[in-house]
Image (cartoon, rainbow, N blue to C red):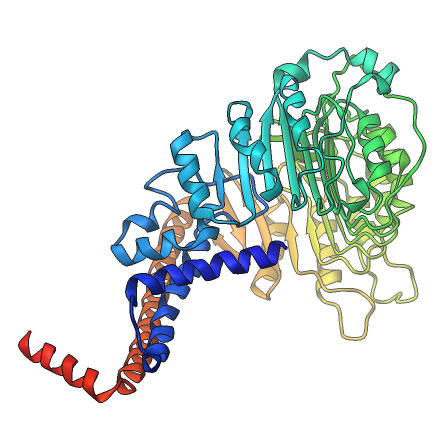
Length: 534
């Protein structure tokens, strides 16, 4: 029904353009009409691409500086095309300047298209009657608004993406100790229970449990979860998700809860988790201990965005590292690992890498410890002993950041050389990128040499100097180069735009000329006389 409604609405838009530009036409003019209307259809597609790409939380709002109102104020024909393109008016944010009159106008222009909306508590009265048309919906609410959503139960057949952001004031007023003692004490909300097409769910600072068709979900995000138990309970119901992003924000006074029952996520490919409430990420332990993800490919642990959207970095302690090692033992297919550690856990890092035989990208984010010579030696591939087991034979990206200390530059250079100078037929991948900090001039020069041979190398030197791809640049040279590159990009972009416009105009001219050649002789003579008189 959704596809049929969209097709009918788009056809009505085309008919509106026909009625204005061709009030009366003969059968012989239909081909001309179709070729001219093709220009309007192309413009409509371009206009729709001016809107944010869903799923996103950046919905357009009524402003003459932004689409769709921007394109509707260029010229009469653009306005006609914009007003007759319903999909252009079916995505907007209600909390940014919408009045009742403006809302009704946009709803009229949107026809029967599915809606992508962002609403707060003051605009619920606008969006609730339209629940049958929701496709992507974002709510900014407090707990007192939940009873008003009860009216949409069993009336959201097209909802695909749901994002509910609760007020931080409600979130901070909870009694966490009571919650961790009795998780069932949190209320349950069931307005979204019957959503047959729901696939993506995002919760921020959740103040209740949700009764949802969790088995349908493929993407689950919980930002500011009140504890690990809340996340595990949701995951136990959403066993088919392919992507999971979690930040836990229980206060430090709350102890880690007793481990609940294991949770098997057999389809999970991407996991991002961080504990934003404690510096040692103690809330991650029960999460890692209870999740089984045998097909996981991408893991980011300790680094993610907090509930306010800023970057939060928490560091894993020994206990959490032990839980991580146990977790990786149940996730043998991992190809990308981004980990945050503070201290010198060389043995633990080696244990981690030994459990990742398929690892292609290794990143230590915001590391402020020391990369030891022993760690680099363990990663070194010895060509003369091909029969020996190689740690991470598929490794292509080695990124330990710029903020740490390097114990031995020679050990690092030897490791890079062993994985760069590999020959064909060896079961070891060739390095493609290295990001490290090297204060030793001789070691840095050797790494630069790899850069000139093709290896991508990033080495910060001093204050602001950067060496990348084997080319040393001072801060001033970097600035000048960036300005030149920006100018080149602008020129290239302008040339591409001009070429595109010229090509479109040439195609339009060809189509119009072909249509004019097929006009009836009488109409051709009238047009010739009109041009002569002009």
